[in-house]
Amino acid sequence: MNIRFDAVPPLDPKVAAFVGGKHAMLIGSAWLPAASGQSLDVIDPSNGRVIAQVPAGDRADVDLAVKAARTAIDGPWSKMVPAERAKLIWKLADLIDANVDMLATLNSYESGKPIGDSRNGEVPFTAETFRYYAGWVTKINGETMTINAPGDWHAYTRREPVGVVGQIIPWNFPLSMLAWKVAPALAAGCTIVLKPAEQTPLGALYFGKLVQDAGFPEGVVNILTGFGETVGAAMAAHPDIDKVAFTGSTEVGRLIARAATGNLKKVSLELGGKAPTIVLGDADIDMAVAGASSAAFFNAGQSCGAGTRFFVHKKIYDKVMSGIAERAEALKLGAGLDPATELGPVVSQQQMERITRLISEGRNDGAEIVTGGARAGDVGYFVKPTVISRTRPDMSVIREEIFGPVACAMPFDDEDLDRLAKDANDTEYGLAASIWTNNLGAVHRLAAKIKSGTVWVNCHNFNDVTMPFGGFKQSGWGRELGEQALQLYTETKTVAIRLP
Ligand SMILES: NC(=O)C1=CN([C@@H]2O[C@H](COP(=O)(O)OP(=O)(O)OC[C@H]3O[C@@H](n4cnc5c(N)ncnc54)[C@H](O)[C@@H]3O)[C@@H](O)[C@H]2O)C=CC1
Ligand code: BAL
Image 1 (cartoon, rainbow, N blue to C red):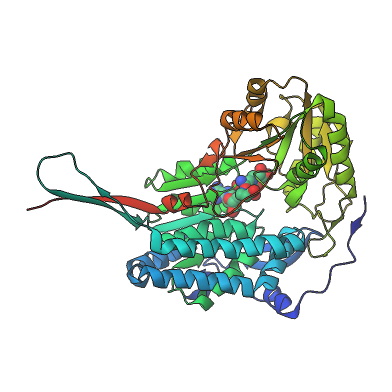
Image 2: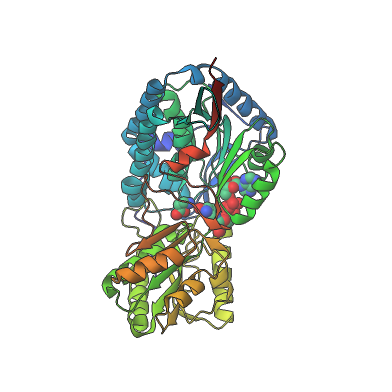
């Protein structure tokens, strides 16, 4: 399997100037180095080279950013009329669109994902998310109640911003994860301390510049770079942060939930997944093969909704498996910035080692490696798109979130929907699932039985800003996107008035 290294166009001079410039954190209206003076390296995952250095903040920087966010929520931000806030959020969306080339390049450079996915998918989705929540600002209403008590009463609820929110995001979708958190929080009237992942801080820092260009009051959005164990942990434990929102591993989600008990801050968590992909006997095979391949290989499998446990009816199993393997072998591997790349590197050496370790465990446990099964090349962090057959429910490839381009499959021969749902639910996770069939009865019965926040039918990894996304079981707490995300960032206050 060849990896193209020679087809990366030179960086646009404006992008090169930003990447090569001195990076600082946005705190209030100032761009500051870490109080400790420390920095961390940002790596190009296609070759392992350092492309930039950003501040490695710690608790002192978190304190400063929280103060700035507190001042902003007590100040001009809370006094701004909703329509004015909506205009600012809309303007930010327009600036994201206007800077699509810069943002897409930064996104693909630091994460390794194909530039087409950033340029045509993630960045437009980011802008759309801000536009959608700009629309909500003027529609966050309370209710009036009819009271069950003698006398005259007027009772109503108010929806108020939860306050200063800490938002900790991952590297797999650096810009859309930012938008899923920042946009509804701004719409609700909160102020924000945002921490991008240490692997992908550049897009978030450029976003900070756009926040300033849009004209947000100082301190409404603060952006801290640094490691999870320092900046992230300090945010989770901070006594003056009212809510923390996190996307990442279930392991860190647990740490955050524990740390947040200090001041009982509100917590929302979007964690791991191990999505079942159920292909029934009547499925359109071409559609299922294309969809299941994309479920496993999109974003190099670094998606919490990725399809990783394929349950395929025995009568079409060989056809589906050979179709997925054929597609895997045809994928063009290369740097994210090469426009022809279909599968980029995974984000880091650590992730590459984790993925290849799990593949080896699958092999040692007796699964069949149909294709792939190892690192690709010896430069950068590429993993061959891998198809693993004849897996068993007890294998670590089936139990653990792999977060790499790996499809694991097992056949079934009895279309007993209760049994299928039981197998699909045999995981600690419950984020997403997909069903491939034209049998409407089976669709609705399975959709009701599967314990996951999203069930896709004849599609996978389909997210829309209107559709709530989040997990059952150990996949998290709360729902992002749609109207439901506003509940994560608002408190309901009841006002009951006995009329004189
Ligand atoms: N649900 C999702 O979308 C994601 C799931 N993951 C899962 O996590 C696995 C490991 O990836 P990692 O990058 O190590 O995930 P992670 O959970 O360590 O990192 C995600 C974010 O959490 C921060 N963080 C790390 N430790 C923290 C702490 N103690 N307190 C507060 N914040 C902290 C990181 O700096 C980053 O911003 C992946 O293989 C995958 O299974 C990773 C990224 C996204
Ligand atoms: N974490 C939400 C988007 C995804 O990983 O699929």
